[in-house]
Length: 239
Image (cartoon, one colour):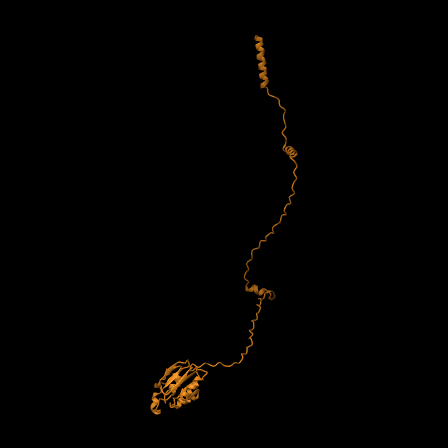
């Protein structure tokens, strides 16, 4: 029995020794990177490579760097005298621009027409002894008519100092000057209903030198109504 047990223990020991012994394995070589790529290339399906047109490279133009300007040295009198006359540049002559000549347009001849007459400011007038009616307004005193048609009372004080000499207030040169207007050339003098108002020699001479109408008042009124230009008038309503 002891021998049987010893044999079993020996078998068990041998089995343990065999299990603990290192196992011999075959060495497997790993494939290199080139071989792995070839293998992968074989396994993968072939793909059609797309042709890509490469864009042509355009070279940018080279920018030229400007050289710094050299400062001009002032030309001295000695250097200027040494330069020949032919090399000295002459200043450019400015082109002369002729001014346009104004051409006058030919004068247009105006057709000669009839001169338009000025309407008289007096549209209605009549007189009797002691009064004179102008444009419907009656005046019971001597009056003066101006160029604009206004009617004023005659100022006899300018000629009253001659009353004793003529027996009546005459028309003097002093009074006539106040009546005249530089812009009016026609003068009417009404000497009364029967023409009895006296006129001094100096005043008469002054009236002769201008365009004057001296008549009795009724006749002067007819001339005033027919007048075609501006006028001034002195009208005596009595005698």
